[in-house]
Image 1: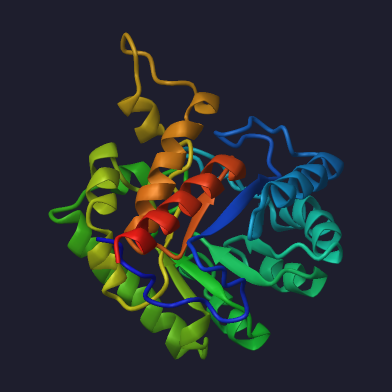
Image 2: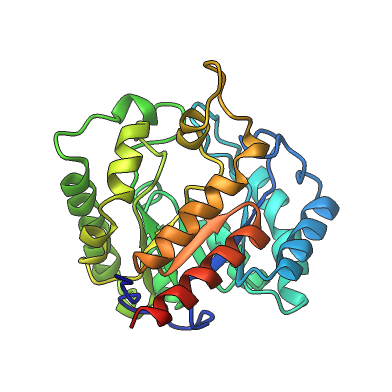
Length: 285
């Protein structure tokens, strides 16, 4: 049975289906593209391409969050993302800024970004939630236990669904206490962040319990290692660039589960997937 999205996020697109967010990693060490979009011109061109593919939002980030990644300095992060945010926004593309730093969020919104996607849920920078409240833009708060260099050491749960639900609820409370509007908040279970593959599958299988928090839900599973493990052949992980079909399958199933938005690297396949899921759902009512 299709589960209609609990809500939409105010001031962002509202198609009659699950949204598709395209990823632009302006980093030298992203797990998914190995720095292909590090140069501003390449990142801008990639953002345009994702928009042409039908992305509802384009998520621009200047810090790799793959396991083990080291953080760039704030000035370096700003130098990476602000030209890209400014150029894409000037062309009418809806941009979110993927950052854990309030200073970057503020500059990105000033450059035209419409939303903030903070993988730490405001925990990495205590200025983030008050800054977003002042900016009056939407924010996605993700489940997070620590920075990339150490996060996989924190992948220990007795009941991953209940614990992620409780920890995300605490970040929602913090966002509301900071003055962020309830209709500007989306949540993300943090697939792959301080999670094993089994934790990821368990969360995906219980999205209804996360949706019970009452906020729009975003899922970012695209190309991640647990898909490479599932599709492994002869003990060799499926290569990152050969995981898009599996990622699209996740997008379709997430849409049927009532997810508000999927964050993906290949927009066209996931957009097709969520459109099929939406039409399937209408036929079942």
